[in-house]
Structures are given as C-alpha cells and as structure tokens.
Image 1 (cartoon, rainbow, N blue to C red):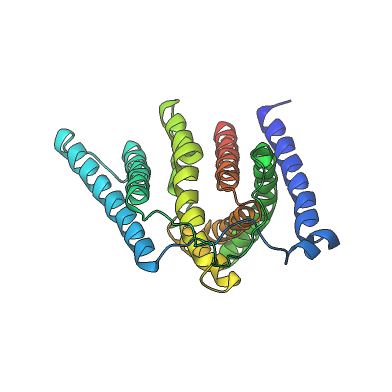
Image 2 (cartoon, rainbow, N blue to C red):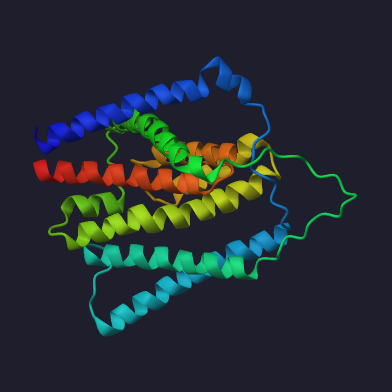
Length: 284
C-alpha cells in the first residue's frame, strides 16, 4: 500500500471513530442527561486585577522576547528575511518561547490562593478525572475534534471558493508544504506538536476560559476565548475550524478538570495535520 493510500485509510478511520464518539458524547440520551451535571473544574478564586496583570505580563514578555530575539538576529545576520523560510520559523519559535517565559513569570508573581475559612460554605465539585484516564480522554477529544473540524473546514473552503475569496493556509502549514530537507519539517513539528499545545492551552483554556467560566454565562465563557483563539492565528481559511477546535477543547477541560487533556489532544491534532501535509507534499 502506498503512503498516500495508507494515509487516506488512516484518516478515514480517524474520522469515522471521531464521528461515532462525537455522537455518543453529544447526542446520546445518557450524555445529554449528564450535560447539566456539575463539572469537576473548580472556580478560579482570583481577583480581576491579578488576572489582568498576569495577562499583561504574558503579552509584554512575549513581544519583548520576540523583539529582542529579532534585534539580535538582525545584528548578527544583516538582511535576514523574517517573512519567509527560516525567518518564519524564527518568528514562530521566538513567539512560542516568549509565551512560555511570560507564563512562567506570570505564574511566579500570581497571588497564592488562600483556603476559605472553615465557616464559609464553598460549592462542591466532583473530583477531577483520574490521572490514569487522561490519555484516553485526550484521544477521545482528539478524534471528536478531528471529525468535527474536518467537516467544518471542508464546508468553509467550499464556501470561500464559491465566493471567489482567496484564503491561504496557516503560515506553518504552508511552510511545511514548501520546505525541503528535514530541518524545517522537524522544527515545525517541534513548534506545532510540543510548544504550541502547551502555551496555547495554558493561555486559552487554563487562563482565559477558566477565568471566564466562573464569572459570566457559560456560553460566553466558551465563545469569547474561542473567538480570540481563532483570530490570533490570522488565517481566514482555518478560522471556523479553529473556533470549533477551541470550543471542543474547552469542553474537554471543563468535563475532566485536567489541562493535560486538551494539551495532548491539541498535540495529536497538530501532528495529524502535519502528517497529512507531508504526505500531500510527497505526492505533489
């Protein structure tokens, strides 16, 4: 069996499994009855000003690190092009490393939560998902997300074509498709399947979603971080799929209470996308 045929067979299997799991998760009578049950994600007892300062630290450190890295590169490599090839990889890598550094600094300065006094009533939350079940929950989230996002993305691309709107791919996917040798693909895989899932899920699920979940209506807590997640990727072609992906990962985080679940699912989703891109490039 050729690599293309093997890839197509595997992808069809993933989509079918995701569709079945998605039906069981969202459409079956048992799961719909569980939809209104308490979730294991505790309320984040943090003051709004402290959260705002944490977000500011992440933003400042991210852009500050990226600016410093770009300035050093321009100093040692005059004329270095940041808009294509290795330049895009450099910008993406410095951005991800900057976000990780910003997260670390924000967590370090974040006020420690104090336990409530014994006489104060606190809402009861069911226990988080057991650690041993995190990998299976992540695989389920990955399969459901893959099936749903694939269907929506194809429909969206058909709509854009019908409207004669040209929407290029995300920069990293396009870079992987056009790159030669092993250096760039391996770097893209590291960024997309290790750094990006950790930083993006920590920020959008562990930060924005969890903060919003206890302070606004549930639909807004899901919608606002997901819209931001889609917009910051600057890709019209992927926008609806990214929003849906964010919604499903937020749901997985809410229902399990484990940030590792969407992180692993995100890594698997990106890895699947990159493998398909590499197979497509090999047949091009």
